[in-house]
Image (spheres, one colour):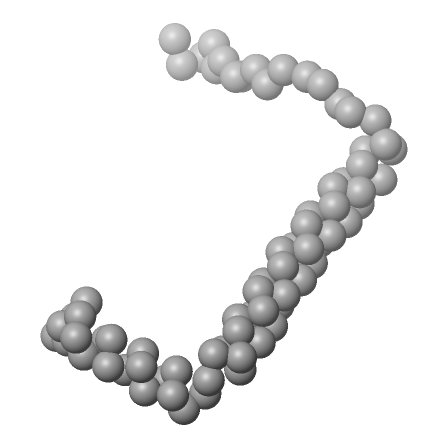
Length: 76
């Protein structure tokens, strides 16, 4: 925990609780959790939009194939 001991961090925690109060800290925590959830939902929507645009490019069909290595016969 850096150069501070556990007792230093406990004292800081007690001071923060006294200054802000538990209700305000609980509200901040729920707001932060909602923001993280919204960010994750936005990232999923972005991925879905990218997948949809890739399917439009391919005509909505899945293209299957095999990649083969080109062999240079002149090198042998």
